Image 1 (tube, rainbow, N blue to C red):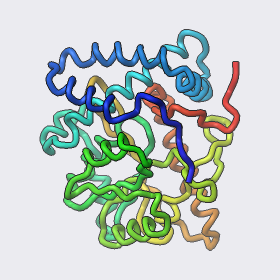
Image 2 (cartoon, helix red, strand yellow):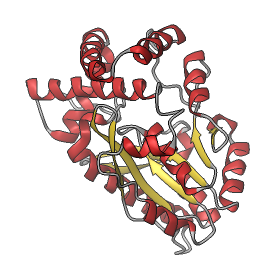
Image 3 (tube, rainbow, N blue to C red):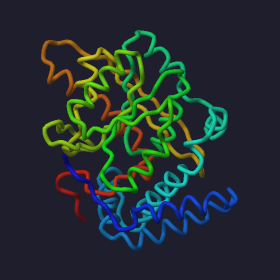
Length: 301
């Protein structure tokens, strides 16, 4: 199981400072504090800054100050994500709707996918605010199973526990075959499985596809689940349209193919989802909060 980067500020003490401070701060003052905080971390976290710059250079082709401004915006977007943990986990459905910039959450598309009775796999990424997206999925009246790797550190467990409730449960992918069985059982009950598709945690479970004109690795797991269960895969993201204001972006459902070549069917579905991610990153690449070199050989100046 692959371990992702960890920096010294990702700890329970730092999260407690954020949560306690923002709880009492007026909403109008939060964006200014976030802008200052983002600048501090932009300057301190040199390794992460370089990685984000390489990723955004590949996506946008930008260089120089224009690129660095977008890199800073990624840090700002991450501040929005962390602060959202102070209000999104306990927000009512009406409060969640009020945080949507246009009120549209793609309910009709999701409900149509669920009518077949085989569940739904929502394929998302570290773009915008996936935690907000998970809460929106609860509104469809059935459990939401968030498949993710919860790294073995107190800060990650703290964030996991803040998001969990009776309708939203975390399925830790470190469980291997046991986690896969849990997800298949959930789909068999016509529940929703949400999974982030832009990080490969196990080298045997990924596939290379072209992504912004260069090969990059993505997990095949969501499409294997789709093939076995018959559930469609729906690419979808929630992007920021202002401080703690969001917009839902949904692609077309990807139905499990049955050409007789299971591996190629999975790769075909993956390519469709990755194309949708490319389309959205063209506009919202400064909200892609991956702080590591995404391509095997990061682009250089």
